[in-house]
Amino acid sequence: MAAACAPRRRVAVSDVAFQRCISPDCGETYALDDARVACGRCGELLDVAYRWNQAPTPKSLKDFEAKWARRSDPLCFSGVWRFREMLPFAPPGKIVTVGEGQTLLQQSDVAAKYIGVNGGRLYLQYEGMNPSGSFKDNGMSAAFTHAHMIGAERAACASTGNTSASLAMYCSVTGLMRAVIFVGSGKIAYGKLSQALEFGALTVQILGDFDDAMARVKEVAGQLGIYLVNSVNPFRLEGQKTIMFRVLEALAWQPPDWIVVPGGNLGNSSAFGKAFVELKELGLIDRIPRLAVINAVGANTLYELYEKRGLRWNGGRPDATIIDGYHRELDQAKRKADTIASAIEINRPVNLKKCLRALDACDGVVREVDDQQILDAKAKVGAGGFGCEPASAASVAGAKRLREEGVIGADERVVCILTGHQLKDPTATVAYHSADQEMFNNILGKRGVRRASFANRAVVVPNELDEIIKAIRLYG
Ligand code: F0G
Image (cartoon, rainbow, N blue to C red; front, side):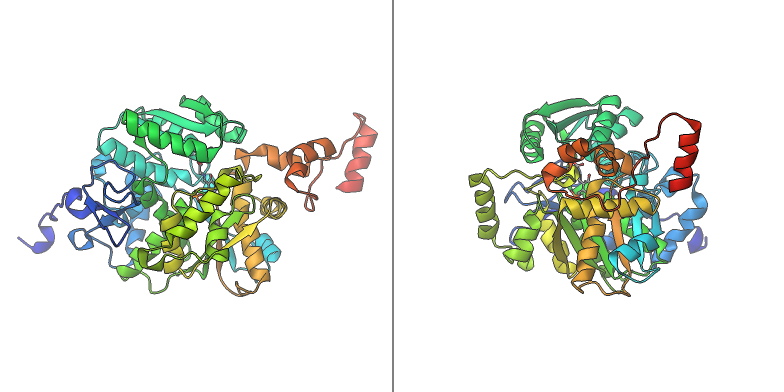
């Protein structure tokens, strides 16, 4: 019989994928079905690692285009799983998809002008178009699949809102698991809280912020044997790699010059770095884009450590005294994260070390932007027609800063990741555009926001036809 007709050798996923400690001094490995979020030997983060020579990898990124013709197959339709050869840890029968990752790379000349790059050079990756309205669905689909593979019955997370909305959605759509979510009190935008509540998650609101909730959920999940889906879970990051595959896909597989992403718990930036390193290792790209991670001023741990105190990946041995010293300072000053961009209101990013590795691999930079810059950038993105939540606009505000500094060149191709949908946090948007000074002060003024330079105010008119027509003639 001709070789072409012979059945392809089936390889068990456990022969291909395993987990490995990120520390080069440890490097301990764990089986695929081990549910853990830290190395049992040294406590460091874990990676999902692959024996690529055991799995069928594409010869060229163009090979993925064959999937476009097979959109009726849910695994080809999904913007995560159509790239499953790049995250080969799940047997197809166990993969959980709800159609995540149907997102757009949109060229935006409004944003290009605002940032100061040439027309046609600025792109916005609209991750708000995911089923639960944020990029989290990419990673959740992967972590949820792993949880399903190992037979988990409950899954938990701490969240500034989007992770919990995503987990709650996967649980309620599939009925496979019960969601337990931890949120800080008063710290989560209503759009996100409303999702978790309506999707039926057990919602534990603790008196504290995200950093407190994160520390607690790790304890609770460990004690009760609940599967943890925060981005300390290495499988989450495997799903988030696909955001970069879709960016490349939309650019005809040509890497841009810059990827600019907001930084909170630093899962995305870590995943993006891993994606590019793997693509390069496999010979699928010849150049890695530069990475810019943007903190909010009120939650700027990465900026402080990387740009001010010189912390570096250093071949896998970052200087722990710098990190510990900074954490001690935060504790002594009782400093809590505080920004209108509540999604990234995080002072102790769990993926710090993986992010340092990504910055190293991608010749990265870190910047901080204040709430005024975030909201002005957000208004500009919205004026371009799609809209995003405040944390997402940090990427655009950060790109503007980097352009002003001359770090980003006017003719470079820049992709800003818009991580969450505009409707996630309508409070910030309405306060910015409102003519109600009291509302502005209560919500934005107390955070140092002074102006709404790009506000589109509602026109208030008496309920009289002549007055309405007059107003439309005047402003229309
Ligand atoms: N943008 C949005 C809209 C987010 O929800 C988050 C994180 C980030 C950016 C930061 O991404 O953690 O990968 O650096 N939200 C998490 C949550 C923390 O709980 O929903 P990161």
